[in-house]
Amino acid sequence: MLIGITQTSTAFGPSTTQRFNQRFPSGVAQQSPNDETEDNIYAIIQGACWCKGYSTGASAITKHFYSGTGGAITHLKTEAGCSETTSTVTLNVMKALLSMDQFRIVGVPTLEKQVIQTIQRTINNQYEAYIGLSPCDGAYGREMNLALIKVLQAIEGYAITCFVSDMSTGYSGNKGFRMPQNWNFDQFAPMSMTNSDGTWAIDKVASSGRFEAVESLSERYLYEGDFVFTGEHSGTNIKYGGNRLRAYITPIGESENVDYSNLHIEFLIRPQTSVSPYYDTFKAIIAPIDGSVHDFAEMIGTDVATDDRDYMRISSDTNYYATYSVVGENGEVVNNVPVRVIVSIETEEY
Image (cartoon, rainbow, N blue to C red; front, top):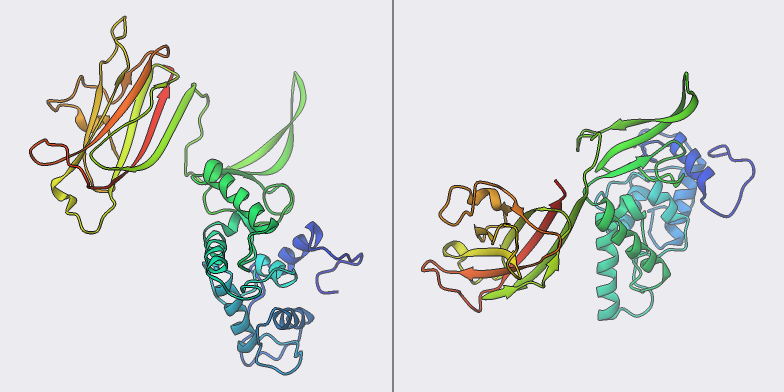
């Protein structure tokens, strides 16, 4: 028995994942040259490398894990787009070795297959903690589609931080993945508490400290955009929730042939119609095109500030629209100069 499973199956499922992590918590490491230990796990790794077309430098199964097999693992990791390419066989690499997945283009290489393979390697490189290792065979199929769905979910809901559970094997539903680096809270053990009202279950949760825990939530709304424009650009009319609005913009120069140091972005948000009773008529951000985040707070005390607040008071019954302008030293709008703007508008009920 390699990892102690007596009732075998054809799948690398939860039991295999759990036992692999128990025996090899840091993965299967390459042997030192003077280590003559033999192990069946080394033989399985060698055989799997051969089946996938990676030479181990040996003419037979040796039950050793020396530099030849280590080189094969490094080669596989590189072709899979892994961000870490040592010879250690991690859980994800072991799953890949024992699957039918390929990490080389299948069939005749074409430009389309090469583009698809580049995408496949990129998502493995950046999102392995979420998706494991997806095939890099240059084919857009079921596995790639599933990987892209998971990547979208990661970007939309977990890219900044996440709440994970390792009360079973690994985190997130007994799948055995490594803890993601951006975890904020980790639910790791159940317990019971008893008082005069009875007994109830409660979970122990660890905190990484990335974001502070809060005791209550107010209603908040978030609107985001990312676009490239020249000259002037007007956003669509939007009716925001809440009664306070904060805006954050990041202006980025899109052309290497333009000197952006003498240019800036003017961002203005205002109601579509007049509002009664009184609310702010507009709020502005004037910022250099420097790739940094800018907000209303930078305008406090300037001649364009409407007041000394870092937010704009709004009415939830009114539509608001934003305008963006690329402006030169003399205050003129500059056309034909591409600028990318990343904007986040956050509102809250206060």
